[in-house]
Length: 264
Image (tube, rainbow, N blue to C red; front, side, top):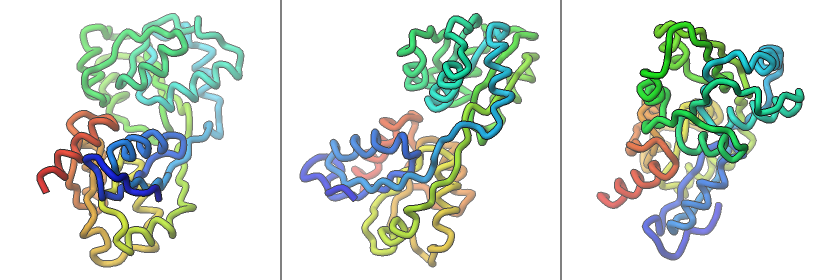
């Protein structure tokens, strides 16, 4: 665990960060800049899909899609990496590109790709609201996503009469190697807050911690979630949620946590 910072609004607080290994450092750095102590407990690993047949087929047909919708930075990274591996250039994006959230959009624009739609709300429902007037029945939509992605977006797009193709751009697998150490941190009262940045971090946390659960083990720990969907998953898994961000980003999560701590 990193040392607790000497000054800042999170001074004296020790915060467990449950993100993918590739993403955890960003949040750790932000916590430390606010004076807090961060304990990185990376629960997820992103790997290429075991079967790339559908992904490769979608890439080969990319010019035929009216829309390509990316819902995460990881989706962008793995999809563009696979395009490079199979020798398909970015000019194959003949239709429009939409992205959920500014970070996802930034991951595209840094490669010179133009993003037509970025919703003000950082969830699939917000994207649908932003896209609604531009979508026409019969248009072809490609969704390169995680193997565990929610089904709300493709279902609603299909209801609007669009031809939707979902492909697994990457797989999310559990990494519970640090679970015994993380459990000890919690059991010894060294953690004040656990941050959850997605529903999958919640479910993998529950799985990884199953052997170590004891009555009241999280009674003194605040649970902070990046948005209502993640919070709902936490509650379904028996966690008492204290903080839910209103802006569904890492910065929004930290802002909501600071507000919560300020009132206690």
